[in-house]
Figure 1 (spheres, helix red, strand yellow):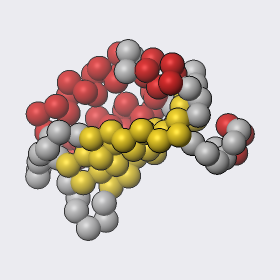
Figure 2 (figure 1 turned 180 degrees about the horizontal axis):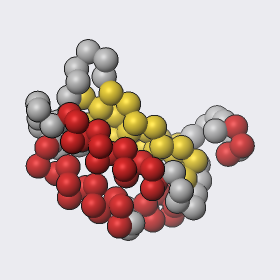
Figure 3 (figure 1 turned 135 degrees about the vertical axis):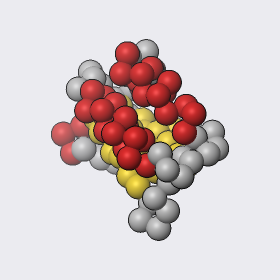
Length: 102
């Protein structure tokens, strides 16, 4: 199992649009085969800073996410709202060991 933490900083004034676009992407992503978790977080001290926590059963499931129409729509929609390029950091999930604990 793998997880990716995607760190995102958007330009001021795009918070509502970014939240709407990302919420739509999340609603589709959690239905993907192999998706264990997809959390969407906002920094309580900086309304323009977000993180996505995405957990998948395998590298193949994570890679398949990037081939979905909803991901492509999100990526293209939010591209111009980035204050800095988003940064995804990949991790191996050590615990929980099985997906029923996620």
